[in-house]
Image (tube, rainbow, N blue to C red; front, side, top):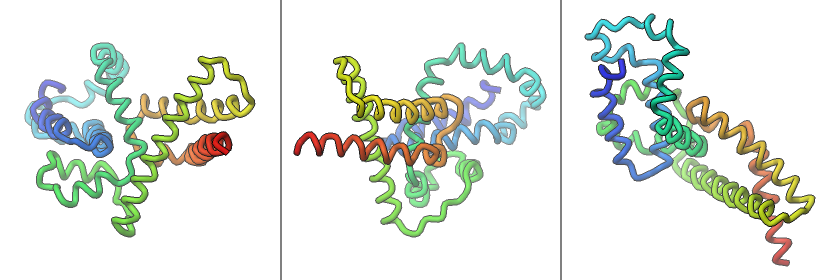
Length: 209
């Protein structure tokens, strides 16, 4: 099945490799994975080969472990993109409307996700900038926590913030390893992200004063 679909999906890989926007790439990569999961048997290459679907479903566990074992680096890289994709808000919506003719498997891609109710482009751009800032502050906060532990800096606030960071990152990493990216998964820890960023900014503001 992988060999038969290689030609059709190689166009997708080439298209994604040419994208300069990592958030857009992560968002599209997630949707293309959904296409591969649910629409592969509808592709012409599979239909023409008379491939039997039950072969896959009857050997799911064996196929899963073989693919992970032989493609672990690709799985790890894909999971990193899913982590990034959780923070991508509407990049695909802005891109596809203007460039839909350039997008391979466009009709299949449209089926892979539901419609978005977007009030206007200004709100969308604001949300994109806001979530990128959230990711930036969270990442800096993580490195700061690691620095504190490496220097054996013991403070009550450090332990509180490190606990919040641990919960956020553990959840996001597990989600990225086991599922495709979508901002709705991020919403589960959204209050914790807000709390973490406020604590981090407030800490340096107080220190400066």
